[in-house]
Structure formats: C-alpha cells, structure tokens
Length: 561
Image (tube, rainbow, N blue to C red):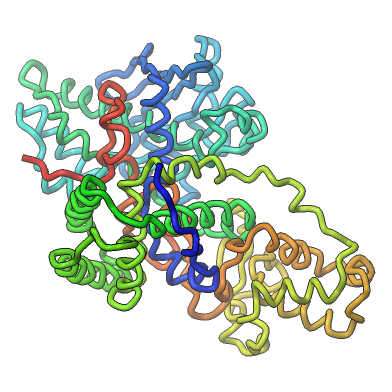
C-alpha cells in the first residue's frame, strides 16, 4: 500500500480543458484498449475461429469468437473483392474491402445468412439487437500489396514500411449504441466486461486485427503456394488497425459533458495520486525509465504530412531531448519525485511534452490508478434533470464557474462566431461550415456552449437573484440546454471545453484527438484540421499470445531485431 500526501490536488479545469491541451493528450494505462486487454488476460478469455470461408480472390466470411467468463462475443467478418475505383475513406462510400459486426453470442448459420445480406451494405442495411456494433475497413493498398508479395515470394515484409504505415487495414467507422438497429448501450451497460466506455467497439477492433492478419496470410498463400512464408510474429505484432475519423466524432465530447468529465477527472485523479507519492522505489523508477525509452521509439515512428502536426511533432521530439537530458541528472529518489518532475515540465516542455510525461508517470503505478477505470462510465442519469428550484443567482454563479472566460467576448464579432456546426442532409453526419459564407445558420446545432452560456448569462442579468430558475425558463425555454449544462458543472467540473468551438481559429482536430487518446490511439496523422488517421492496437498481443505478461505495456514498442 502506498501512503499519499493528499495536498497535491487535481489540476484546475481552466488549465486542463483548453483545446490546445486536449489536442495534446496521449494514451495512458487508463485507455479503453488497455483496459480491455488487461481484463481479457486477467479473466483468461479464450478465443476461437470457428469459420474462415474465404476464397482465393479474398471473398467470403469468417467468425472469430471471444469467450469470456460468462458470455461470448463473435466478430462476423465479410471480405470483399473491391475494385480500386470504389475504395474511399469518405463516410459517403458505399463499398469497402471488409465489413464487420460484433454478434452477441455465437451466430448460427441462419444468423450469418441474415447478416450477409445486411452487414456489407452498412447504413443501407439493417441489423438487430443481437448485434452490438457495425463497422467497415479498407486496405492500406501499398502496404497490403507489399506484405502479400513478400510473403508469397518466401520473404518477410520490410519492417521500415511497417513502421511508416502501421496497419494493413483502416476502419472508416465503428458504429455502436443502437445505430442501424444494433443493440442500445443499455442492453450491455451492466455487464462487467462492457460497462466501461467503448468496450464493445474496442473488442470489435481487437478481433478485426486478428482477422486482417489471417486474411493477408491467406491471400499470400493463394498467390505463392508452397513457397509462401509465414508472417513473422514480431512483424505481425506491430501491425495495428488504422482508423480514419472525421468531424462526426468531434461533437461527442460537447454532447456528453458528464461522460467526458469522468474520463478527464479520472486521468487527473490518477496524475494527482502519482504526484502525491512521497518517494519512488528503485523498481518503480526503473519501470518509468524503461517505458520512457520505449516511448521515444514510438514517437520516432510517428509520421504526418499535415503542417500543424509536423510542427507539433518537431516540438515533441525536442521535448523528448530536453526530458532525456533532465532525467540523466535528476534524482528520482527525492521527496515527491513525480510532482517535482511535472512541475519542472510546466516550465520546460510544450503542452505536448507535458501531457506525454503526465501519461508516462502513471505506468509504474497500476496498483494505485487502475481501479479508477470503474469511474469512467456515465451512470448519473439524474444530472440531466434541471433543478427548477435553484435560484437565478446560483445559476449565474455556475455559469461563471465554467464560462467566465467567455462572458466578456464580443459575440457579435465575426471572428468569434465565424463557424457553425450543422448536420448534412445526405449522411446525417456533423459538419462545420463558414457561417458568413454558407447558408447554414438556420440549421445550426447547439454545439457552441460558450456563446450560449454568455447569451443566457446576459438574459439572466435582468432577473432578481432569488427568483427560481424555473420561472426564468418558463419564459425563456431556449436557454434550457444551457441551464442544464451549468447545473451539470456541479458534478462535472471537467465537462466543459474552455475554448470557443465556433471561432475562426478553432481546430476540430483537437477535439478528435482528445477523444481518440482515451481510446488508446497512437500516431495521430491529421489529413486536415477536420479529419485524422490513427493506429489502434499496434504492438498488442494477438489472442494466442495474450497473457498477464503481455496484456498491458504492449503500446510501448521494443525495436525489431
């Protein structure tokens, strides 16, 4: 048991919840992927592949089943022979190299027949409450061809190409929570293995990665016959699953303030706990130093063609050099060593470097922080209910607490309201447009909480302090969503972004990265300020290798030899 000084508090939301910092978050041991792999190893999950019916053209279906302590879940995968001209990462695509669903249990032949008529159609099809997710993926064409050709010729693929791309297929969507007929979240929320956020989606992607490895080996065998080489397990380990994510994900963290608060608050509590450790033992120090060295290798593999990300990567690599020099002479046996290191980072590193270090100091302290993952789901339905008895004065105070920075902004200035969020008619997906250049204002979605808070605050200024807020809302129902958010702030201090989400300089990519970092994503590669490619499960053990020894630090690479 570790004794803690509890005078080191969580960082202030005003510091943490700026978009530039949220857009600098890195995965950590609290990330959803690592939660899942630890659980599956701890509970001795068993994995089978009862069906692999794929022809020499790469067309067919397969089933991969994960057997947990009480229930089984099956990935039903459909492989397609997709002409190159139909391959697109756009959400409006209508065909993909592979399509998937995560089935609740073990599917029958009749289930698979039904799914074969719907899953390949994605949005155009319909699935049932027996299915927990719906997803699709496209090949990384050049790396796929390279791996197939190399194996078919009896050789191994070039590790450098593996480093540069990191995945053979990338998903363009992994839908859950009731979309297109799939089971609602409520169906599985009380299952221990799926109660944490996004565990259904993380399991689907984990099994998808195994299918992709098996499929590329199958296609190489079809081409090379007896001379075909088996993919080296070390190379296979560093093939993750890519993901291409756009603006559809960005509004999530605005629309779920209590849930997002829980993610951030848990991370901040974990950081505070480790900073409060009075002294670090030699083995903990050694673990930290080893993980730090491995993290440098991971960053060295990270590539991007996006100008903003190129600059951020350059700064991060400079931060790593600075931190390396500091650790070479720093005595980590001093009192409160992790707190001292974090304080040093605030003066010497960029936000990118600060947040990487904040993630890294958690790694030796699983016994101290891992239990916090039970607090990351949102089970507080009562937070959505407006307290009509609260006084106007109390509500004004709550608005100031979360939005004091926004109250003095000139919201009539075009720069402060240059953008507008709306939903496209074609795909019913969120979009961000130019308010003064496009006819979109009347379709605007309530995704500007700072502006709305300033508007509500001004409207409240004309009401007596002691008046119940219910009286105000009876005359101004247009402010209900803002009053609800203000009251949520009492239980969700990290629930609000402390930046303008409709300003001319907003970078939606920061919102995407914040969410994806909690998934456990690595190697963020923005293609613009509105969509990003990432890698998932690179380095993770495949089902046959999953154990207590391999289930956690897999995200930090060791050099291939």
